[in-house]
Structure formats: structure tokens, C-alpha cells
Image 1 (cartoon, rainbow, N blue to C red):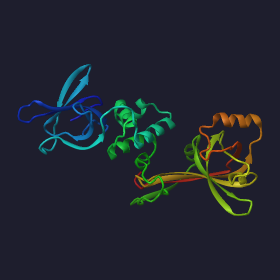
Image 2: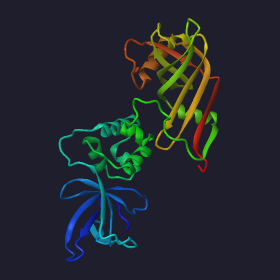
Image 3: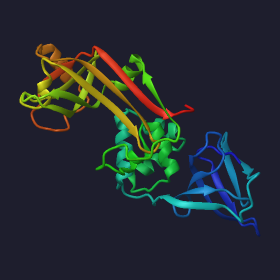
Image 4: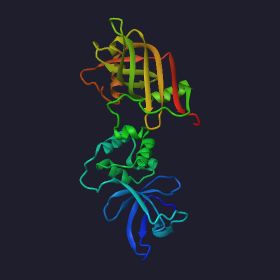
Length: 307
């Protein structure tokens, strides 16, 4: 059995052949269109994960004409299996935590719903459903969305938001490899959240998270003149960015080392302010721009040994 997004799954009575239930396929779990499917049932508007049995067939929409494809090679389990509801009935937009996180990640990457749905092998309507309703999608659906958005299923669920990352189990056969300078620059990207390591005026070391921008290979962040990050000015500092995928027990880190200086040229300050992707999360008056020009850029990535 193979299907496409928008096809209909029809469940028939094995005794009479009459239609017992039908629904639209709104999510695929395999690129080749084989089961299981996320199906929105026409009678309840509920979305469930479905493993079609011998009582099911697909109505494909090709050139506006339906074409019926029956299940083949499916184990006779006594009928189609449905597993866990993954979304409630539609209604007035009332996004749950998962929907808000999905929408935020999508906007952060500048992706439309259509493009995100294409990457995640689901219908745009289903993605809208997840973003607008207090839905509880299956882990398989979350993993596809996480892959499409460059994050983790755990991050979309919000699990462990108050816990330090890295509490998951290590990979059975991990591979630790060094990253090239070009890979490090790519992972730094244009902006994000990093950590700057400085020596405070009293001589004690400190590591502080800051929102940063990358402009012309220079790392820049905003702070206040009397803050801890401001101690970076006039010294050589270390700046670190990382990403941990708890669900897959893998991740990467990039370390930039170089001199830090305060940006005083008005045009440069104005350009940084105009290109900034976000206000400092810490809030308050933070108009002092500090730039770090890396003289050394290194990084490491942990992946399964077979990747």
C-alpha cells in the first residue's frame, strides 16, 4: 500500500464491504508512502496514527480522479489498527505548548507552513492544526518536525526546559570528530545564544550567556558598560556556542578565541543595531556593542560511529 498526502484512507466492513470509516491522510511516516499514516477522520475530525489492515484501501487523487489501491502484504491482524490520538477536533485557535514551540521554531528559521510541512512529510493543513490547537502528536510526528526545523523532539515538547542539557544516555558507539573552520563558521551561522568566558575585575573567571550576531566573520553582542560581559573589552576571550540533541544523544560545540573590543564608530553601531535579529533576552538598557574577532576557531561533533 502506498499513499500521498491528501489521499483518503477508507475502512470497509469485511462482511458487507460497506464503508465503515474514512479520512484524509495528513501525515506520512515514510518517504515511499508506505504505512503507517496520520489520518484525520471525517466523522470526528480527530487525527490518529493508523496501521492499515486488510479491511483498508487508499483512494488516490490523480488528475482529479480517484484511484483505489488496496492493502497488499499487510499482516492479517483482524483489521486496521489505530494508535493514540495525535490532535483534537479543530475549533477556535488555542495553541498548546507544542504548537507554540513548533510555530516559533518555524518563524525563527523563516519557513512557511507549506515548506515546513513538505520537509516533515505532512499536509500544511495538519501543520496548521498542530500549531493552532492543543494537540498531542505522536513521537514519530515530532521527530519529523524536529528534523525539518533543525531541533529535537524533546525541545518541541519542552521536556527538561528547567534542567541542564545532556542528561540523556550516551550513544552505544559514539564518534567524536573535529570540525573544520568552515564547518565552525557555518554552525555559528548569523546569530543565536552563546557563552562568553571572561576574567572579572576582581580576577575571578566567569562564563555568561549572551545573544550574539555574526557580521563579516566578527562575533558581536550587546551588553551594559557595568555588566560582567563588558569585562571582555580589551582582553582575549573565549566564546562558545553548542547544540545538544537530547533525543538522539548527539551534538556539537564551537569555540572561538580572540581579542574583544568595544564598537564605537557610529555607523558600525547603527549597522549592528539594524541587523540584530533579537533584543537581548536579559532585557534592560544594553546599548554597548562588544565585538570579538576570532584568531582561532575550533569545534567538535558527536555522532553515531556509522554516520
